Image (tube, rainbow, N blue to C red; front, side, top):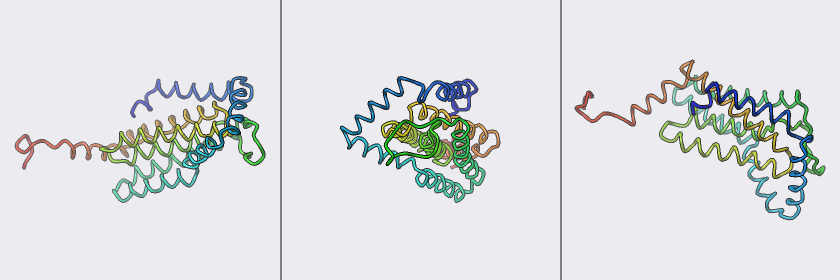
Length: 223
């Protein structure tokens, strides 16, 4: 996932975040109509709303922070304190960033019944940003190399599903979720760049790769 730290990708993700915050939300007629249609769909198909609620719970603070804490402990046990610190700072720092951006931008949430009303602002979606950041950071920083690709795919799928669940439940505009995803990818990309430059992510991958690709006995390696 080195692509996340490339300058062009960073620029595109930043532009996507700004566009989602500037153009979307209650001023966008298409999003307003979509949320109205979803409100009708939830009343017709309550099972859809129930399934979305189950998915959205996987992006809650106990789940995301718990995953990050467990992965950081795993890294500490593997004697990788720098990687553990990088993971913890990435996940916690991104959450504070989301809270600050919500207050600064101040976008209102979609209209929804009082039973599901939320007090925090809408943009960017905290569930979308926090879940994708936590799961993807764990996959790319803590998961051993042989399993990293599969873990990364699973993290992306789960993070995107959590974001979609917020739209289905009617608690976020689609652009809130897109902005949350963009912010998450920017956060993880920054963490990877810092980790490579500082050396926090340099030793563990090399060790695993060497272990998986040992030369046969007699080829420049003692038996």
